Image (cartoon, helix red, strand yellow):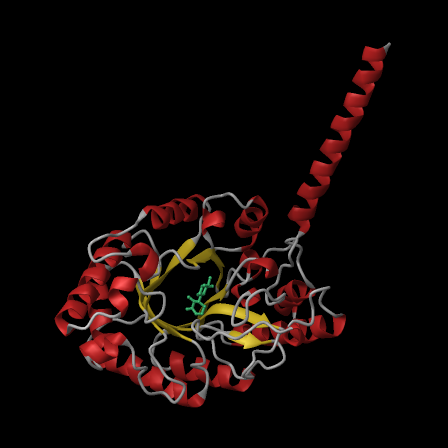
Length: 373
Ligand code: XIL
């Protein structure tokens, strides 16, 4: 008798589990996917972290496999991680990323070869120009050649410009002179002949900085060196997306004969303390409750502003889909976004299309719906 009851109880449990499984399966089957929706328009990417490409974040892994066809490593191909000492390279994580991307049919945009931020300690204060020159050539040759044919593209140089369009005063400019960007692309072209080569920066949709980016691109082209595209990062505020400047930029950059990409898209809903549009990873400010108003949830009114902004942006991307080759979000879900900790630590931001429970937000559906209109 007891065993019969037990049997019946167990079969109820199994039936329950099966229907729960079916519910989840059918829910994910009916959810439209970004990569399929825009498959004739542009690639759809996400920045991913170590947990994710190691397959340890199963909820994120499900979303990545279902929604995206491109990935950018959020940190692990930056110099401080992949090249921590003069002659030490750590390839393990990047190799795991390559395996994960292969298994899941994802194109990798490798990020990034030459950037003044997240440099290893040994490099930051290097005085001797010859040593910087050696570091520069070794770094590019070693890493770009190892991943040639394994990654789809490289952000060869990241964030080389000031807001006024002049070259940023980085260690590379100081020690190597203004031609270092052309040199970086020349080295990358030789080391990675099968990999697309891009220049990437934030705010280059703004007229002055855009002019600086155009000057960089033209200098590479007129040196007879290959550049395949330009990445506009796209760390904008949901209530302040510069649509006209973005449209102008797509036109001007594509007129140079290169791909245009939106490479780090997120539309934050929180102010930064300076009320400007910087995306400088070194900018920091103190925590302050007034600057963190939505810890209990995102008000509908703010969600609406974001949905509309995403919709407007994707309409624009579609209008120029001959020129725009990829749109990459900087993260998979709101809880994992860098904007929860930058430029102020410990805030609750909501910049992406999936919420903290990996559920699609209204912004997701509005992006999908731009295809029908
Ligand atoms: C950010 C990462 O998301 C953070 O995890 C890290 O602490 C700092 O860098 N522009 C870039 C990206 O090109 O590499 C930055 O990524 C965000 C701004």
